[in-house]
Image 1 (cartoon, rainbow, N blue to C red):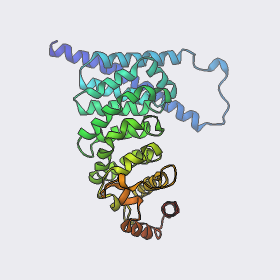
Image 2: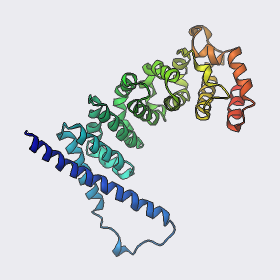
Image 3: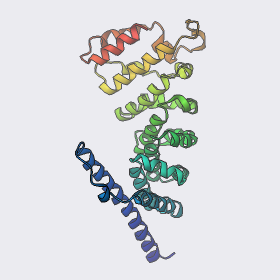
Image 4: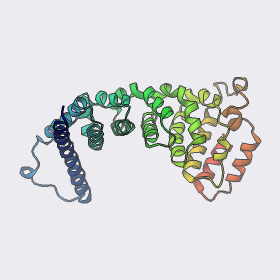
Length: 306
């Protein structure tokens, strides 16, 4: 295809994407107006939008999905994914996209070598994962998402997008087993990442640590700098989540008869750092009892009394 034809094709595709984006923005604005007027009487039945509105939604979404399949232009792919991601703010569209096989089309974009395309695909899947039925299909991509986290540049938008998706996918324990092999990667990011990355990793780790079936896998892992997170000077969001992580592990660390199986953990493991009678950790907790934040002190008491 010559350059003029390629340019024309891109322009036509962008018109379709822009139309879909404008429609989504209109729906968001209309929804905002409805929320602001909560309690006001609704319009008469004969003035309400036609029932075909949702069919138009489905048609527009189908065009975007077909466009995503048909083009190899990264710019068009990126814009189509942004529009699909925005449309997934509406629960009805989450179902429509799934029924149109959009999840597999978007998931296929995770194999794209262009980082921005992968990032936008992850953002779309993140919004779509707010739906339980969608999670059942998205879970097949968890291993690939974990690989993206490991291979992405540290603290990059791509890495954060993948971590946000795992946060949603780990809210329930259904898919925790798919993340076991990535626990060392998560803990490495906890040591090496910036505050934004640390907060997002801790969201995943708190979800995993709430599941007793994950306790052994987490306690065996190693993260030498973990104690640095339990400090009065640390970012409040990081400290809250680090304490929740430790509290969950302490709660679940005992086996069924209430005894701790110590010999299955190495001296460098999280078990010996946090969950045994560790003098450094005890000193950190004692210091945090004087923290000005009430929730921090409550979390510390929770750990000390378990």
